[in-house]
Image (cartoon, rainbow, N blue to C red; front, side, top):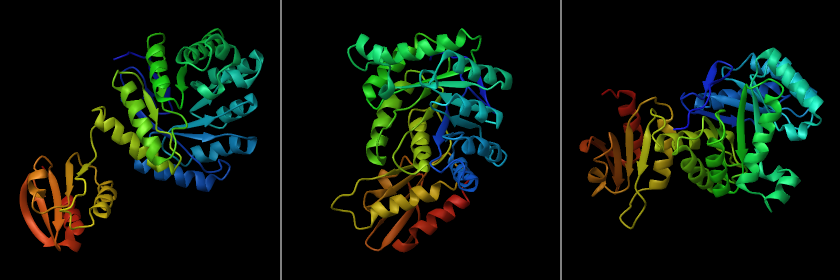
Length: 349
């Protein structure tokens, strides 16, 4: 486990051994306050703990004040190129800003941002992506490399430290999974700042989930990382679901119902795919720390569900409700989901 310093973001704390927090980013127009707040509320309900919004103009920067007043989780402003937007975002209540000092401009402009962050006690996330690695580092390392990413990030950290500010979070991201893993391994040995971890531009839900699970799994399993985002080309709520699953699978977070389901085979005589998806959606409503099994065969279902706390198995027009490996009820197939809901409603250990 790598020990990092604590950084406060709004009313949350990352680093210093605190739980790894889940982030996402809105895809609404930030200046559309109503739509942005609605999406943040949805994400918060799903388990998002820090939210980031793109700030592309002054209208968006000013909108942060109204957005902030209507949400319950810390708000991060994502800024590129224009240092004035970073300052305006902080003045309008951003709990943290994400910048790449390399594209903000002159040292004087970076200093203006840092001075404002000092005044408002706002942390700065220094973000470096492989797609925007500086030309001299690409030439030095003969391409985009993990070493180049780390050097770029640490150069920017040193720049801001020289301005007497160390309220910092670092992120180094790449769509190349193994490069990203290597970069985090190198960086974690050279800094004690909290690390925001993610595989950038990971792709669509299927590809992005696979790449993120492998990359984040390899990084987090080494004790590296203090806050994460699963970057998917899809609805932001899918990022939250995936992040929660990754953390649970690694044993870094408990709580929430785990759903296991068998693969389909020639014995399956029920629409198992649809049923499993319905169960996954259903269990999101219940803050229980149990395992639910969904099986498509009434022959082997009870045995296969033995290790689960609760299970259902169906076929040939009927279904079984199983608790701790024992059949407790037989119902019509179309009543299975309702029977499971009823059991969850009255679940107690």
